[in-house]
Image (tube, rainbow, N blue to C red; front, side, top):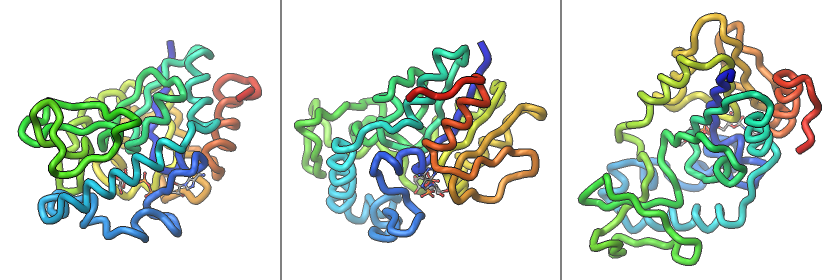
Length: 232
Ligand code: APR
């Protein structure tokens, strides 16, 4: 089957009611990013960082996947092997049914042991809140999130996927955070690239920019890739 590799950012979850980071009113307007999403901030004030992610988990529980998430999954039934590489830490791609999802920046519904990063635990919906004092399986835990100033271990496997893409799609990211923004450089020459964003960042010539929201843009991309009208 043809490989469709999709790089998604906060914009694909915007229509599910989840704030992006850098749009007007976005998360970074309300929180000092280096206090709540950086390694130094976590060391300085772990209580604040736990509280920030507790709030985001509560918001996520109220959110549902939108048509863009669902249409990416629907393409799996239209002859496409769909690989999602997301900067998002929400689980909306999984909840929409996508079966191959790679999280570059971690996962909101998971925590990991502070003394053994291989020990990762899924939080239950009825026990979402953590503090620096929380103990799971005998370990203190931290959000299973890649903070700024920390390595992005999934980037290398993500570049391998980008290199195998028959079609590459970028949805809802401002392309300002590296290394995620560099994925486009690993796509083979001649492979079609689409970028869906209502306020797209600068991209190289040759990228097909679809200036639309994720749901509108995915309906157009679905038509392009399948020749059919999207039903979702
Ligand atoms: N549909 C599609 N795209 C949208 C929509 C929408 N309805 N609304 C906004 N966007 C676009 C914006 O135009 C912007 O290009 O989504 C993008 C959001 O950009 P950011 O807020 O910077 O989010 P993102 O690119 O995912 O941030 C990358 O930065 O803070 C870190 O770790 C965090 O993963 C995050 C990373």
